[in-house]
Amino acid sequence: MLKLAAVLVFAASNAPALSAPEVLGTAPMPDVDVPSTGASTVVAFSGVLSPVTGVALSGRWTGVVRDNGGGTFPWSVDFAVSAQAPGGQSADTPEPWFGEISIADYPLADGFTGLPGVAGDGDWVLTFDSGAPAPYVVGLRDAQVHLLGDGPDVAFEYSDTTGQGNSWDRPFSIVGVSGLGPTDYHALTFTVARSGVYGFTSVLASGDDHFTILYKDTFDDTQPIADIHDYGLGNGFSPFGVPEGTSAFSQLLFEGTTYVWVTSQWASFRPNGPFTNTIVGPGEVMVAGAGCNGADLAEPVGQLDFSDVTAFLVAFASMDTSADLAAPAGQFDFSDVTAFLVLFGAGCP
Image (tube, rainbow, N blue to C red):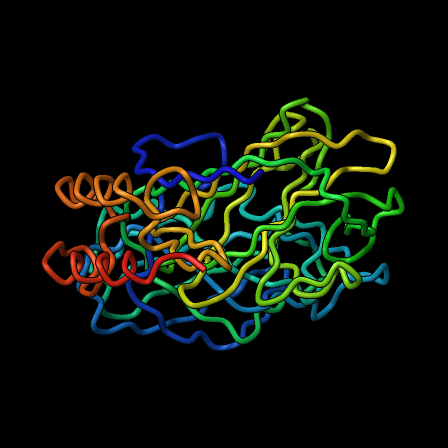
């Protein structure tokens, strides 16, 4: 049985980018081609009021000039970005920033921090390094730049097993399907309450190999490559340096968008087993189909009772984001109490 928990935490885990940055402002970026000599562009922002501590990008990678092996080179792990704020302060992407073996038509949705709380309004200079030698050229298409500010680390944790009786041929990246199936998987469909960078960590209790994949909008196990947004290797060979049995990655998620996180058995000849998954970001994770999710703040999940009322009052008194149920975000007042009462009164489906 799926067991869930939503709590406020103050320490990062072993997943990358768990500083829980939230989106403060967004502006479109011109399409950019990045040859071996690099490239730069300027993006103008206005109306960003909060201190900016990081930058995120969303859009689509493409291989303008790439190899002949299905677009498996250049690699996104070699791609780097430097963002210079209007005041001259700058921050660079960590290494590696991404974990994919190909940038051919690969979704771009990630961010990085490192700015000391700067003003956001004005011209931002973004400088790109493809990390690839000539003649290869990397392209960024339909991109947007997002300025990030510090948000709370809201952790959502659940436990289950990869043995669900499902069967699929899982992907091994965004460019191919594994020949190690059929394998079993568990799928969690969810949305988030605030746009920002979220960290994903999955730990298989046995320490054996497994694989997790994040899908955007839809998930169809007969089309395992379609709508992949990101993934994390759980076989000990992740570029993020996590141990075998742990899958970890970070991703820029948007409020109002549906995501599906799939936790998969590695191979048909590897055992299924229990896992614990954690999502950490600036907003609450809301599970699809849980109509009482906004008011369901305490165990048991899927049941509203006095324990949920008590949990709300405690969260409200401590200004925990789980009690921040109404606009404006970050402000705790009677509108949040009203929102809780409405959700509580609606019950669960």
